[in-house]
Amino acid sequence: MYCRKSSEDEDRQVISNQSQEDALEPIAIRDRLTLRDRIREEASAKMSGTRPSFNAMVKRIKKGEANAILCWHLNRLSRNAGDAASLIELMDQGKLVEIRTPSQTFRNIPNDKFLVSLFCSQAKLENDNKSEDVKRGLEKKAKLGFYPGVAPLGYLNDKSKNRGERDLYNDPDRFELVKKMWRMLLARTHTPPQILKIANEEWGFRTRKTKKTGGKPLSISGLYHIFHNPIYYGWYEYPVGSGKWYEGKHEPMVTREEFEEVQIILGRNGNTRPSRPLVFPYTGLIQCGNCYGMITAEEKHHVRCTACRHKFACGHRSECPRCKTAISAMSAPRLRHYVYYHCARRKTECQQPSIEIRDLERQIQVELKQLHISGEFKSWAFRHVRELYEDDINTLTHASASREKALADCLNRIDKLVELKTSPGNEDGGLLSDEEYSSRRRKLLQEAAMLQSVKTERLNAERALRESEEFFELAYSAPKRFVKGDFWAKKELLAGIGSNLALRDKKLIIEANSPFAFVRQFNSDEVSENEFIEPEKSLVASGQKNLIGSENSSLLRDVNKVRTNTSKVKLLVSKVYHHFRELAARESNSNN
Image 1 (cartoon, helix red, strand yellow):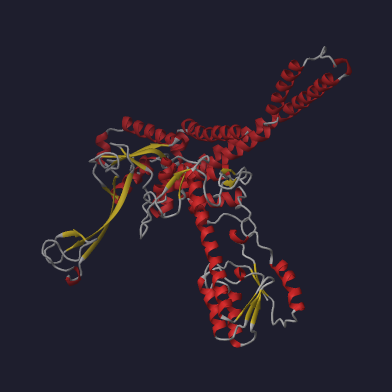
Image 2: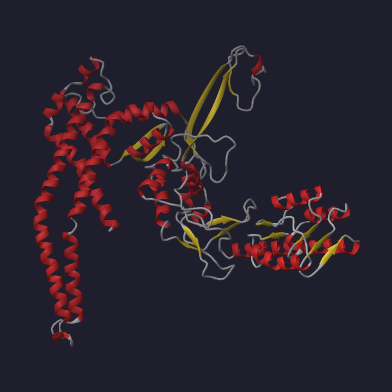
């Protein structure tokens, strides 16, 4: 007895394996059949050789373990030409004497074998027609703007609509979180692994639960699939690889320009996938100072010919272009590897020159020295920022008792207002009208919400303390971290210290972000004062031509300098702390 139930669309209306068995058991009893085995299988019969249980059954019949098959219908045995041919071959060999169904018996005679072939071919025809109908329906659905597939993370398929009209709608549990992932990457403040860790550990992000899979933390491959999927900017390709693109009717998470920017950040050129992916730390961060296009990078491998001393690019060459000496014939040729950054020149014929990565990184190191602080200053800043935090907490603590008393009074007034509104004497609204009640209640609720914000302010202060300490630690260690850092460390560091990065005439222009801008201004003031007090001639004579790059001119190199500039240093630390304090307050208000 062989029963098969497919999980695919064309057999969804077919009865289950248990129902098939229930229909076949009375036939076995009535005809006194000896059943060697009862085989159940859940698989599609579209393709030949893909059903393990069916293949095992055919082998057992060949060995002579059984000589007939009892099934509910012939289309349970085959929907393809290969499996149908294997059944007819068994009948030709005399090893399969009959195939019995509830309505008909097919014996090993020419007419019945022809009918077996005909019914199996008819099942294949039905299957092929349904496949074409499904493809045609999906293409029509795609043209109408309804995504013809399982919704990606952040969206859901609208099953409340008819087939062919089911579009995507925002997943209330995941849409905003996935959108936040895009924003974090576009802001260049987090790398994909960092985004993944925040999503899984801090947000508790889990994939959509289905019958067989889902409900698990997002994987790194799943995150990259999100960042490379064009459906998130509103377009999709169907069928995949066909080159046919359609605009969906769902709400996109990012614009096409933002999507392309992410591809550049991740080191991919649009939707193409290079055969050997190359990663460059500063692509996607810097704009051309002339045409405002993005700065891209390319690597070059050069060889110095040992015969004629000519240097040439060896990417697609096997010999020296000048003397025709083969590279393989050169004795110890000198190989050089270069990485050049230049304008992508996608919009205009920009003629800005390229810059070698070593020259670019030297400029970044000079910029980091201007934003650097000493170890002594870092320790002093930690103490002073802790004082600012403790002063904040002290103020909040003293205000807490007063606020709690005011909050209790406010809540009491709300209760009395409700009692007055619901009192028997106010049935006609004579004591308190609906409009007056709503107005007074709204004002009291706003007052209560303001009084309850003391906990949020404490959290904001703690966050400002933590981020200020992280900032001063970064300002102290940035030069060393840049020199020793890997790809992601350099990219994250450059994105963190500055914005509006531009490259013009081989000069990198960095507009420092607010906390670093405070340090740069402080360093500039210190250098200006030193230049005013000490003549340039004496500095040149002592070998200190570059004040900004010298060890003596960096921010507060010794403890004595900290002591002599206490008021200015306090002002700098206070500006940094209150910058993060205001930032935390703004984000708290926006979330509320």
